[in-house]
Length: 290
Image (cartoon, rainbow, N blue to C red; front, side):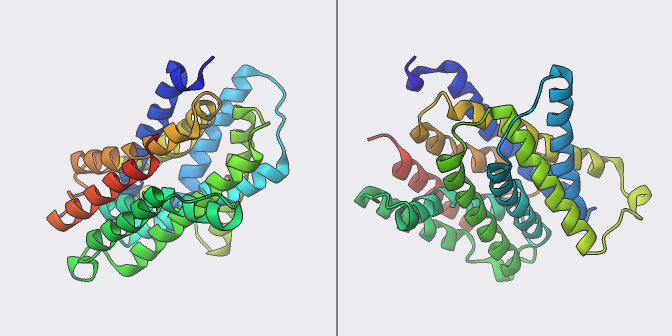
């Protein structure tokens, strides 16, 4: 079968990106009531629980490489979601999605440095233009009142961790069953979240004071940010060429910012909109098929 023409793969790929786009505003909403360690444990834990229940229903033996699951789980959801939550605690969903969309550029840079992958002039130009768009989008951070540089730095760290995840998955995750590897990956992520929760002396003593809408947001951020997209993306990666995955990443900031506005999480300022548009256009130019 021609991978480029796999309708199931393309639909799964698009759905995974839409899911990740929806998850970001939910996490941004939930962080209003939960601490960073609380939300990290909830969203990864709920995602892991959903996958575990699915496998229990299927009632089959799970097989995966612990080494690969450890590497993937620590990078994403582990550090990626930890830094992302720190970002949302100190910034807005618009800023977060624009900054974290630079993941594609970091993948190209890291691939060139460590995997000896060539960067064409077109890709190099898109990287420069993309980072210029991020600079424009974050130029008013210090005076916005809702964003700060800690948030921007955390979002950048999340993008780097996510790009390392893509590199590791590209090298090592090919020969593992999708659902089994996601189970192992989220199990490692959950253990990571538990360790962060314990090491920061966190607790849920305030649970009764948190309104139901924030609990729902935390659950949905786990389902749309962990369980659903990892399953769909890993499935799609077996059917669709990598170049389509890179192109589909353009959907995440568009869906996330739009849905965030619907949830009342704010809309981009004119400067952010200009910077975000530059980033999305540079992503398209840098990742489109020749």
